[in-house]
Image (cartoon, rainbow, N blue to C red):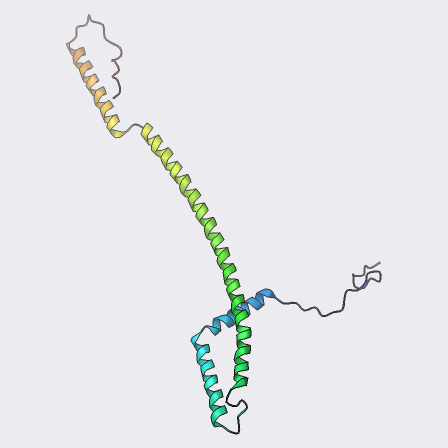
Length: 179
């Protein structure tokens, strides 16, 4: 027996038949950013200035084409409508930029914390290496010890050459104290 989907099953009530209007928030945000970016350009200001000059010139000088006489109420309405839409779009673009800045700031803080932890680790490692190097024999210390051993061997050789066969030989030299 074939299974019927949820829409086709008779015991399942149908959903509402109202209009389902879905707005993609990201798409609206991108469009608002593009509009806000365009409203802040010199090109937009130039286009708006040309439109206003043509509008006023046609309504003042072209008597037959006067669709908006002197107080220019229709032009004022167009600017008011433009401002009513531009302000929320600009605010939406600013909110999106603020969210991006917040995410960037959080990433920077995390990166700074990681850098600080890495730096502290490296400082501890460097301190441990300095302590370890302090315990290792230095070149000057080894030279001194080798010079002392050479001197002891020379003294021992001189004693042996000047000593008779009857005298007992020392088996080990006396150790010198460390300086």
